[in-house]
Length: 396
Ligand code: ADP
Image (cartoon, rainbow, N blue to C red; front, side, top):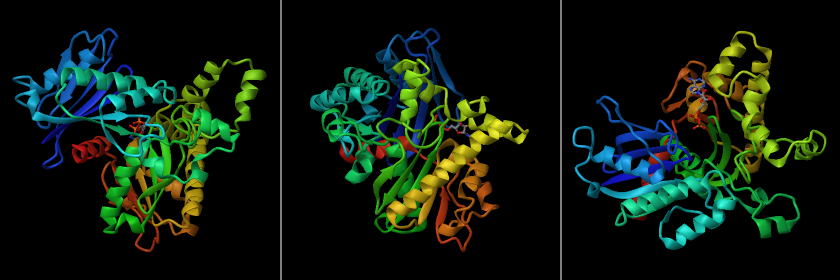
């Protein structure tokens, strides 16, 4: 049985066709510049040359049609006909409070997704457009929505209600939702497997450290707290996002510096974080490079990042009454030994000891803690597409 996983952004679309009998990726690809001049699809199949289609794609329907054409293409495709696709799993950023699980898409779900747009005005609309386009092109094929927020719906009230007047939560839905849920769920389940333990017996802190970054405290298999909040801006320092700041900074920027709401939004989401502090780049590799050649602000940006992750690990250990396992994942977590070592430095008092030789690993699953470390530290490459495909399979 083959499942197509679709992750639709505003001008790009990522996809994977996964054969669920062996959980094997049959083809994966990217469509870029949807609705912009120079639209292009690149499809990769193991052992073959890249297949590139360049043609105008004015909207997501055009893009998805091109994806389907690429998959069934006589010489470059991987399936004989579209009837080989048993279901489609769609990544959806925000499911609000309504969805604590993935869901089979019908008209009622489509309406609920529209209602979530106000919570994720940048991310949900392209996700919805992608679903609509797929439903038009494959009306008979079952589709599933998998939400970034769903895994965190198990958080207890005290972890998700902000201490604003309660009506802001009740009337406007202002609360912590958390994101990257599919990734946190996936790597925590792999961690339990690697340790040979039931996830229900474990206290795990998962560190998703990419361009966007978040930590989650997972107790007995359930998310009980996570660092992103009402939006992905809260929490850790990220590539271009500031993470936690005193909320009064926002009013200061408006009243004293004369910035508009949109400008504050832009500064905090696009011009801050590692980029803002270092002045070098939002890409950690560039900033690590600059720091290594003596750039003090680049080093400061990294130090702030490490320090924030370390503080969150400490607070989540406190929230769970201990920690058995720490998982590093996503671009930086999987590939940067420097980050993992720096984050864990000084956490020996919690029983966290990283083995420097084992920590050299990049991009594959590995235990990197010393044999006498009471907390197991793991590197696990995330695979949100596989998680989406698994959820899709279980719902159809
Ligand atoms: P996102 O999906 O949020 O865009 P990723 O999970 O792909 O982000 O992570 C991207 C980040 O990971 C980039 O800042 C990149 O510099 C960093 N990264 C990737 N490989 C390495 C590496 N070998 N060393 C350090 N950082 C790395």
